[in-house]
Image (tube, rainbow, N blue to C red; front, top):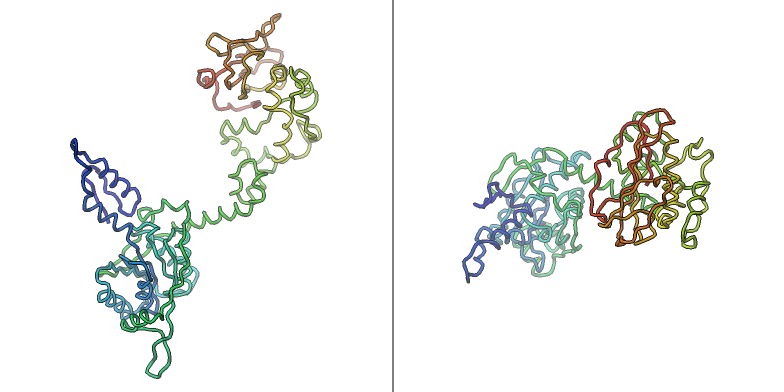
Length: 499
């Protein structure tokens, strides 16, 4: 069904929640004069609202056509529509029985019968998946919301019932139920049997011989709430009155569902490891992918080189490591503290042999903890921060990088920061300070969080050449300035990063 509004150039798919939202908004915002109330709900919108809120029965049909009217008689529910899905092998008398029953007993109820084209029986796994794909799209097809769907599991093959319950679980349902009928009637040979004719079905209902097993609602998967018939359409091969033959052109919905299921199973399998993973997204990775991630990089492997080349700059900054994380440099940084008693205690960390160029592979999880003795907790102390910058500045030229970008967000105290402060509250200074002059201590800073950055470039000249510092600069939201143009993607060649 397609409805068009004169205010919108493109037609709207009424099965889409967007169509309802736009139609309701257009009605609510319709122009009206002073003192006039909101106009009445337009007839098309009223009809649309009735369609999506009217309870709809979804049932499969096998060799027992009485199942359809028995499901329709579910107590305390007034169905406005009944949708039947069956195979091409269902006999015409069974289909005609269903049509005749509703024509006589519920003529105002919208009845539609969909038959899976070129599908007669379940003979293989492929047959099941073919039916299942049609089923998902068939459920999505009407404009009814999940809160209006009622799924009956009784009709058809057992695999059909299993597929219907699965569809209700992933797409959502107001209620899932099963219907049973007592053998209250007899064959000509006086053998008990369930009701089969229209009068027998109504008589069984009146005398309490029909039993509905109500299994409750299904919330549906949130990942599939946006799924619609526009994304997963059914192909109608032929149509005759309320009966039509349908098929699915591909297995797109089933493939998406399989991917979501595998992702969920991986998360469940990694549930106990979630606190240990650096990023929770890694819980969705396969064991082979996680093993590859924890393995050391192989410079000779084309896949590893390509992975590093495609990493965003922020990832390179996360993984290339820090500075003064152990040994003499860390001791010098801690010894320069202005408030030694506030420093975090040293953690017992054992560095690999011949660190920072170990002879054996170091996994990602081990590598992540090698810098735990340095970081924000330590560098909050101004003395530690100054010494860290001095040692790092002296270290970088010796390691011959093409360039370096050093940044660390931290709260800077109003005074005793070690950096000059301008009248606007921003800091701009060269590091190290000019010979013979110590850094001035500012007094006008507001104490807001700022970004301290040291960005230095070296040209590929002889090792004896002096570095050309760009200096230590404060920029970012706290300083009222934006990122400088010098912050850009890393260039090829050696690149050092500390953050």
